[in-house]
Length: 100
Image 1 (tube, rainbow, N blue to C red):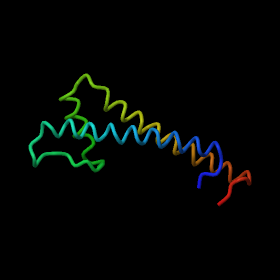
Image 2 (tube, rainbow, N blue to C red; image 1 turned 120 degrees about the vertical axis):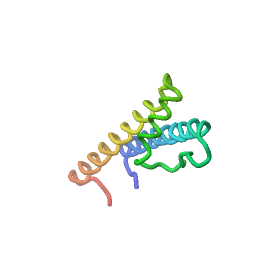
Image 3 (cartoon, rainbow, N blue to C red; image 1 turned 135 degrees about the horizontal axis):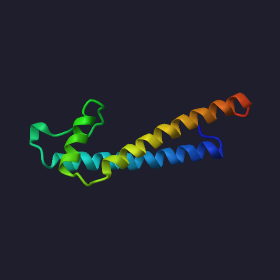
């Protein structure tokens, strides 16, 4: 449970970046799938194995688009916010003000 204002801010920022990255990822998959045959289409599930192939196809079809870069920035921001949240919760717990 998120029980403090700083923790709520971490979670709100994380969710904001998550939704943006989620929508942009599906937009990329949709735009790439329009040019592929039925058997070659990417699934809309997120898989790490096909990330590089999706990136290469998207950049070849849309070389001037910044959607991929912005999606990766959002993912990196989510990772940093998650680390910050864990560090904050550990600090809060060691300080003795956290509730489990």
